[in-house]
Length: 142
Image 1 (cartoon, rainbow, N blue to C red):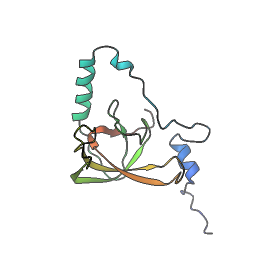
Image 2: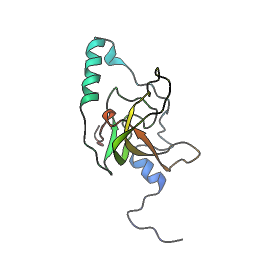
Image 3: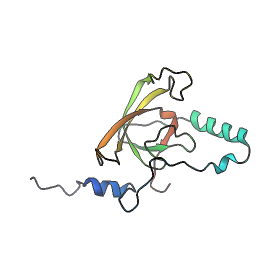
């Protein structure tokens, strides 16, 4: 076994740094409260539209997270960082065949890496394609 370098992190240490641990697990099937939708639904729709249309420029290595109210997949969770692996010049269109699907022809132009937090593969880096309009820069303070 080779000696580890000082900057190497175990999967447990990395998970702890991003706020995941066995002591503080997060529900993968969480439903965020919709407190902001109890008032004017039209205003909420306009706000979500404005967030969707505001583009961020990302580069490989950037940490990102969902914009509020724009999460359309289970992974990553809100406020969980993902690392930008690749920004695609030409988006891949989701191949969902049903026009009634929320994923129908979604332009997937961002490849993100996340730490898989369930078995099998817990602690492994996995990649997924996403629509970059739904993401913003992640910060630890948020």
